[in-house]
Length: 159
Image (cartoon, rainbow, N blue to C red; front, side):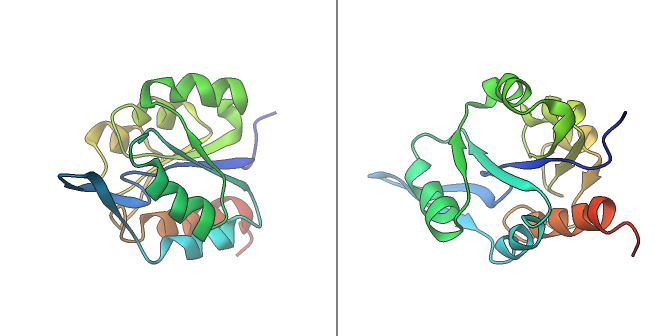
């Protein structure tokens, strides 16, 4: 029997929760720009589905951890882009997840998972592979758009 809703929502961080830009100085990576509205969406949808954030940004992991784990109270894992498909498939099963990603390596997951979402400014490969493309850009409310869409489509169908 085909699933009617995802069990877990997995989100890439950079280029989804952030604008995808990294601010460097001569000391290295200093900043990432996170949007103000996306945590509202996560708070709404976590009542319905488990949430997991993944990042491949080892050098900026401290910045990401500060926002995702410490500020938002969410789970975060470090998973390389080219290892994500195998990691997700083995750990969660692709038929169980909604996935949000923006990059070239995310396109394969977006196409294979239960339901794929890309921000409006994602790579063309991700946009072509997604079931839904948000009207907002990454770091500017794309995650909120995705959460509202998932809630309406899978969790409040009677409305």
